[in-house]
Image 1 (spheres, one colour):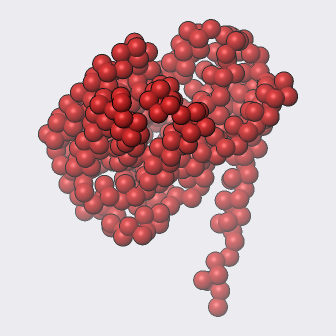
Image 2 (cartoon, rainbow, N blue to C red):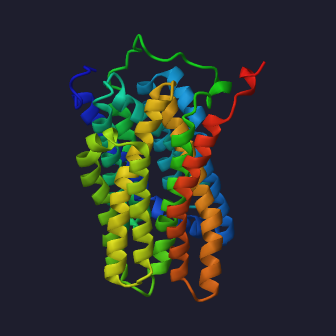
Length: 393
């Protein structure tokens, strides 16, 4: 891919593919709990375990799948990932009377996502100069977020006809797998970092971006996971759905516009803007009405556009590993933060709900947005100043 042209035909095809993959995935994901409960006849505690394991597969395995993609090649890895997606969709389609097939479909799609994400994001920036990376990373994020915004709408239209929904999704995955066979195989560049053994898949970790990404998703996912419950009885379902779609569309529009500025911005400044907007959004939710929730979601969308992009750019800049491995490590950080959000945030939410003081939950999350980032920066600075035992004689 030429270094001077960021949006080649291959990259445009990749962006379109990411959009369609996310439309397919997110037409299913919001309705998985209902689907699994109907097919398995299990209670929500058991369903939660199944979904939790699926999430663990998708995120915790990312460093390993990224290291695998480094060996297989990005184009081959994308095809393999889309075959896994297709098999997962097929399992959902034919597993109506077989709960094991439905669970297998979940794990196949989770595994496909684990391989697809670092491969796709690395292919986008492959051969690009450092000056072009912000535009490409932000464009990749925008395509994914647009798919996330459209997917639930497609799912809502088809959820009454699950066989049709799974047939359509499987057809999309299979068509993309065939189309990706015609992608140009990437050439290994002369300055590419060496391929490390699998046991060193976490070596060269960009520690600060990894930690900040984990904290970012820890606070961010509390908004994503618990706002729907909080909004019940306070705003209409249609309003909430439109607002959440607006969140994703805000990322789609804003992130490419600010990409170059975010790339030039100092990391602490980007953190201050990102976490500051998140804090403002969480405080706004305490109002509990349509205006307060809309303002809060808009603030979080703006903060996320800056913070999540800067985290990835800093990880690429600070790591000596290939972009594929870096994106795999960053995906692990997303999983760590999201898991903490589920454990800590769920208990906090239940505590405040039980006490009849639910708006206080958002104030606690806002306080964490203010307190955790300087704590992470402070620990990182102390770690850098600490003497290395290997240097002492």
